[in-house]
Amino acid sequence: MAQKTLLVIVGPTGIGKTSLAIQLASHFKSEILSADSRQFFKEMSIGTAVPSQNELESVPHHFIHQISIQKDYSVGDFERDAIEKLNELFKIHDIVLLVGGSGLYVDAVVYGIDSFPKIKPGLRTKLQSEMEAHGLEPLQNELKLTDPVYYEKVDLKNPHRVLRALEVIRTTGKPFSGFLGKGKAKRPFHSLILGLEAPREVVYNRINARVDKMMAAGLLDEVKTLKEFEHLNAMQTVGYKELFSYLKGETGLDEAISEIKKNTRRFAKRQGTWFRKNKDMKWIPHDMALTEVINLITETLKDEERGEYS
Image (cartoon, rainbow, N blue to C red):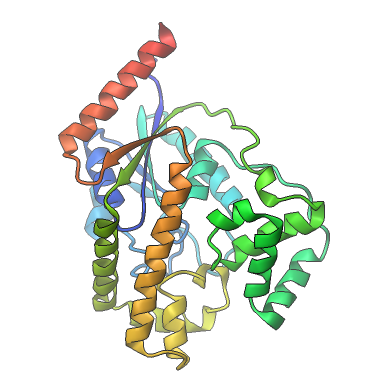
C-alpha cells in the first residue's frame, strides 16, 4: 500500500504559499487544508488574504470560511477536525496538502497538541479583568518575567495567547514553555514539511505591496462591517485592529496603514523564528521552479519509503 503523506507548505506571510500549494495540489490531483487560523472565519476575507474564488475553485479547499467569528474555535478543535478530514481524504489520496502560516495550528496537526494542567476556576475571568483595567502590557511583562522562552516566540499582541500562557503559569508556578513539545502524537500518515524562504527585503517588500493591495480591494470597508465585533478574539488580528483604531479617531488612515505594514513585518519575523526551530523542515527558495519542487518532493518520498521498507 502506498505511503500516505501530508505535504505541509509553510513560511512567512506573503511569501507565496497559496500559489505553490494550488500548483502542487493540481499536479498531485489532491486537496488542500488551510492552517491559517484567521481564514477559518466567514466574515474575514480581504485582511486574511483568503484565496480568490478562482483559486478556491481550481482545487478543493478545506477550513476556509467554515465558521463565524462569533464562535470559539481553538487549536484543539482544529486538530480534531483536521485529523478527521485527513482520515477521510487519505482514503482517496496518497498525498494531501496542509498550508498556512499559523505555526501552532500546523504543529497541532503534524505532531499533536500539548497536554496542559487543569486551570484554576475563575482564573481566566480574573486575567481578563486585569487586562480590561490596566491593559495588556502588565500581563506581557509578567510573561516576560515568568517565562522568557515563550515570551520570545509568542505573538504578544494576541491577548488570547498571553492569557492562556499566564493561566498555566499562575496555576502551576511553572513556565508555560515547559509544557510544550512533550511528545509527538502517532499519526497514520507521514509528514513532509517544506518551508518557503526569501531574503528579508523580498519578504518585507511583498508584505508592503500586499497591504496596499488589500486597501485597494476594500479592507477598510470590510473592517467597518465588523466594528461591532471588535472585542472578539478573532478581531485581534493585524490589519483589523489598526483600522479599528482609525475608525475610533485614534490615528490617521496613513498612520494606520503604516502600522499594518510594520506589524505584519513583525509577525513575519515571529513566523520565521517559530518555523526555524523545526528540525523536520526542508527549506526551499520561494521562487524555486515548480518542476524542481515536484522533483524534490517525489525523490524525498521515494528515499524515505525506501528507508522505511528496506
